[in-house]
Image (cartoon, rainbow, N blue to C red):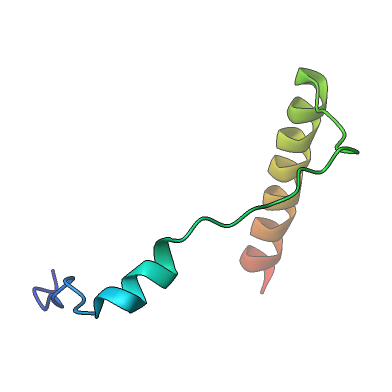
Amino acid sequence: MNSNVNNSIVVMEADELMTLVTEVKETVATNIRQFSAADLWNIQRNMKTAQRGSRRKEINA
């Protein structure tokens, strides 16, 4: 295991910190389609099918 670890403390000035933490006002999208449980199930099923096809290509290659 690699034991090289970088220091995660970042030094910055107060004004830079204030610009990073200022509040950003965002608009909320109103035309978002809501997913049902069946939609999520189909997405997962399609992902499994796609992964199965890519595994076959790797074996044949």
